[in-house]
Length: 505
Image (tube, rainbow, N blue to C red; front, side, top):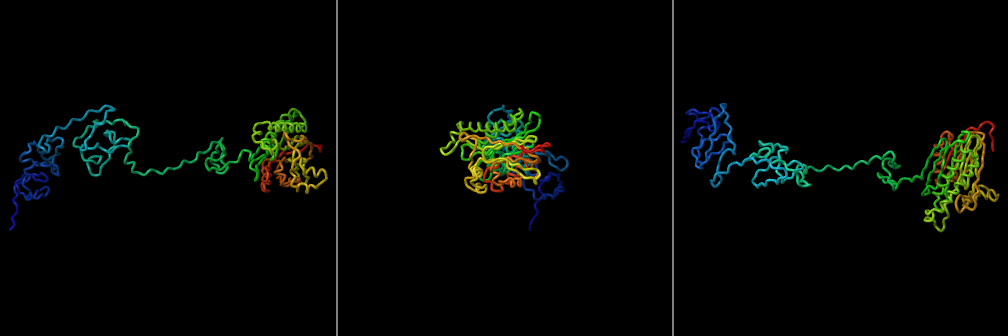
């Protein structure tokens, strides 16, 4: 027969410390089974899970354990003492050393205090930019742990420190250990910076319209080779406009032009256009045409306001252009580029001066001037004669014009500007058109695709006098559409309505 165990002689519930009465088999507060109370052990007591410390029956280890205080009157046990407040002995029975006092603040720059392997770690993980071999300071941000009472997720230290016990020390090394929290995150992919927009004064790529053009003539954004400055040129000065293009077959533009406006002594306006074509078989043909056009244009714009007759001014301008081209033969650049089969720098020249009721033209070579009236029912005219082999054959009556210009020698010039020219013979002529129109000054890169005056008049837009720049672009496009075998340059000079009674000079 089984027997019930006798009730243990206790005055308080071992579980909740509720006072008991004699004969109670269960606790009236928590229902604890009082018949299952074991006999009190003889070893040192331990802290119960609910925080109560049973009074010791004896002190075999010689430690004076404090007795837990009574309940606070509401069934809750009084708080227990912290471990640091209780004296004790080590495993050999010797008394433990007293709790060390808080260390005073360390001076700035003092070496860190070494820690043993058993010393608790400094609270909280290291903040970014802090070396792991330095004691953490109070400035570190706490990290909340999931289950513990401490904010940093660790168990309470046996020796709590004062807030200023280990002040944060300045970093002694230029390179710091990375924060493991940030090192775990993958680095963000690098985004290439967008190309900077070019300044307003800088050249913009003609291909992508966004990149900056470097000194070598290439786009820094897309790498596209940029056209050279002389590959395509446009200029508008008052009523005069000119366009020059490299064409589709040549590797550079050897044409050049000069346009401008001035006033005669009586205040009447005067317009000037000069077009030059470099001789490809000569040395530095592009420099020759540029020097000739500038010299002739400057000479005309300087002579006309002084009262020089336009035809005489044109003659003098051709001479000035010839001197400028001759001077190139003496320059070191010509000597370096000179080849045994090459000649001195050379070019052709053609120009026009338009004043009130007077049109003056001048030329050397095979560039031309055309007259196209505003009234297209009136006949157009070609105002120059070529200095060429074909023109000489026609003038001598040896060949028809069609036969001469079909010959492969047709464009061999017999007159040019240059140090090796046989004899300089400037050609000038003056006209007094009786109606308004437009003067077309061009190189053979254009008139090869509109040779006769009728063909040129058909290619010139009807509003050429009102829109000279647009019309010059149209004419260059006409040559490019025809094949663009040569450099193309054209200048348009509108001729105003002449005064009453004007006629041909």
